[in-house]
Length: 270
Length: 317
Image 1 (cartoon, helix red, strand yellow):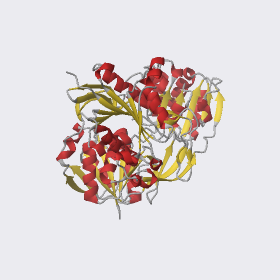
Image 2 (cartoon, chains in turn green, brown; image 1 turned 90 degrees about the horizontal axis):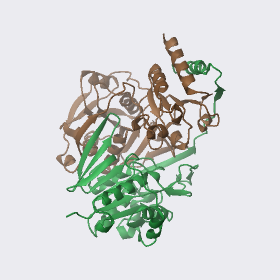
Image 3 (cartoon, each protein chain N blue to C red; image 1 turned 90 degrees about the vertical axis):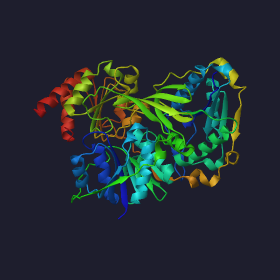
Image 4 (cartoon, chains in turn purple, yellow; image 1 turned 45 degrees about the vertical axis):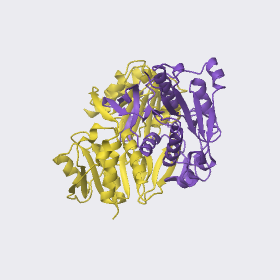
């Protein structure tokens, strides 16, 4: 008999990396206008859908919960996830969360995972390899540490059997096979799959799916433990990088390779 | 003087340049002590002394490498407790950041990643939003954990060498109880080139190489450089994904980045625009990469790169 899976996918609403992005205000928090579902999280959602499809698919009662923490706009990332195929959405939304660093974020997410475990244990928490805005890659490891779970990061292949997850993890010099008991926190790379696009049927079906909005009080977190006050790091100053002034641009007239070497020699780079 | 704990996870016979950089930074912040893991020998010992290290801690158990990061974080937590260090410096690799992440939760300590410079008072400089902002950050907790990018400083031995004391740290058995275990490993073929993250010079190719990385590799070898690539080139399968520089690949800050046949869209720029000097070769004069290049050549990379390679070989004799 196959067990039903309960998978939480962490999805983040991030500023579109194709556009100019800004830091705002005295605390230098990220401007979240023009935001989208983080591209790297689509691989995690796809991995979750493929794992459930490998074990009986839709009729089998598996849960793929898209969880996002963030202001009102984060609901868009959840809606997109539901259209792609997540079975339900959870939005942790609270004004006190604004300005949370990775440590504070992982605290709030850990509390939410515990809250969602009350109705039945969670088997797997899937994330992308990084957010495309903060780019620290700290949250999956910190979430795992707070929940006392193993973490398997940068998975490029995944398989679940006998209550264990087996992953392939690529590093620069080798491939590793990693085995961890479930539940576990797993981050996946952009090499693991080709994320599907929402189709018309998925978009219609998403309208009937539930998004549960939770506050910090719902998940039992004291507001002082998150946000700027609960963060363990602070940004003291931020300034836009002065645009790199374009230097000398030449058109090759047969000796550009020599000129390139002259430039390197003048810069003492040879 | 406040102790600064440097984590060195040594995976070869000699210390990596990035480890020496961490030791150099540590001396500017206080008294450098090292939590060591991996291959240890007399040469390594001598180098640690020449960099002014006063104490070297090593794990009591040798199997930390059989697991992903979690037991190393447990080991470091014990090392911080034993040394009373107020600052922990770790290399900014993906494993380094995850070890820092778990250590931060264990110690209730703030973690700043992707650091490129540290001031004597602990303020850390880093770039955010794909290098479009420069920020100054600090941990507001009693212990601060910084992961420092390679090439942030020039390694310099101490004015006077030290004779470090050697101590062992027991790693709690619980550290491996529920950790992800490495059950198999197959090595990839090595190129013999420098590591992309450590390299002083990177030569990168993109869509414009059209499947042939030969000219890029030959220039890299003439310069002693690492080879990088854009996402278009790795997605096309022309070169291993490990070589990818950019938002979904590696972020590098070499002294010199030579970009060949790469348009320089946001995805690529995110990975390289903090390089000190950028040289670009592209046949399209409208490529965005020319907006950030210190020296740009509008031309055919299959002409320009081999000519440069030959000229470098000639000058180096």
